Length: 170
Image (tube, rainbow, N blue to C red; front, side):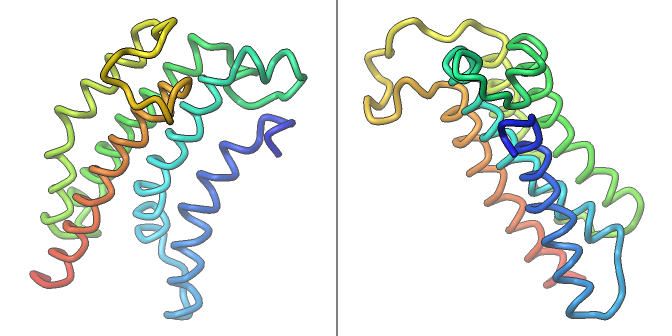
């Protein structure tokens, strides 16, 4: 699918509404849009990591004819999309709480806003031409993927804690 620019949308769809909404449907016998959207909140993080990886590899992928979504969008627009997905995680989580679909503990994810803003600034800046001295050598030359991964790891922990809080506190 990545050769057609559909890999990233497939990750978002499968990790989000299809897997989460589908599991809910199988377990409960009915479809729930709030649950599907909740899955989408989570899936935006891994999708941003994949986007970052494909931005990192954009010149090589384009030269090989691999048409990932970042290749099709171009680097500037792909970076904007990555930032939009980061913002959308918070907006969707807040919308689900405001709509009364999930309780206030889900708002724990808002503690990740300062790191998200720092990561967005990384997506605004040029990728370093050389590995920074304090950057793990085993990860280089991946830059944007690593930044998105670190952000997603923290977001996912807060998201899970928020869901546990929703269950425990009602």
